[in-house]
Amino acid sequence: MVRAWYMDNDTSDQRNEHHRNPPVFIDLNVLKDVSGVEYFQLNLKTFTTDGTLDKIKRERGYTYEDELTCSKECLENYEEKLKIFYKEHLHTDEEIRLIVEGSGYFDVRDINDDWIRIEVVPGDLLILPSGIYHRFTMDNNNFIKAKRLFIGEPVWTAHNRPSDDIECRKKYVEKLSKI
Ligand code: KMT
Ligand code: NI
Image (cartoon, rainbow, N blue to C red):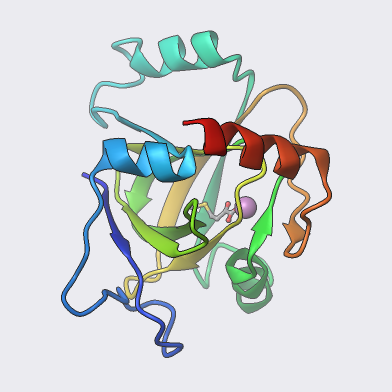
């Protein structure tokens, strides 16, 4: 089950949990309101056969799917990629990840520009909206395998912050301010 919390301002090892003192957890419904991030919990044993993933794909128009394994052994230019993943950025499309093995953290900026750390484990399907500033890091287990979904031909381009003038960013900010 995914957990989410507000981060401290400590710049030490990004793979640690980085809780505030005392910890401040965020309810997943609140997470949606303050960031637009959506979450689905899938049953890992049955999602390929019970139609739950197919239903989400159909309803949201996800036509592309692949799998990415992040570990020292499986990912080419591992250290370099991890640095890119952890640089604050946005995309012009949703970032959709279904975790199938391992774990890690997606950090997203909330409506007040505070970092929220989202812990993902197998069965978690996370959807970051287009235009949200975010980053990803491995945790101390150093292993994660995730399905990547996309509407049409995938575009993985990361626009590093600041990218406030990109149309999708303006739309995101406008939409979030209305919630
Ligand atoms: C991304 O875009 O940050 C990633 O795909 C990270 C690995 S998937 C858990
Ligand atoms: Ni990203």
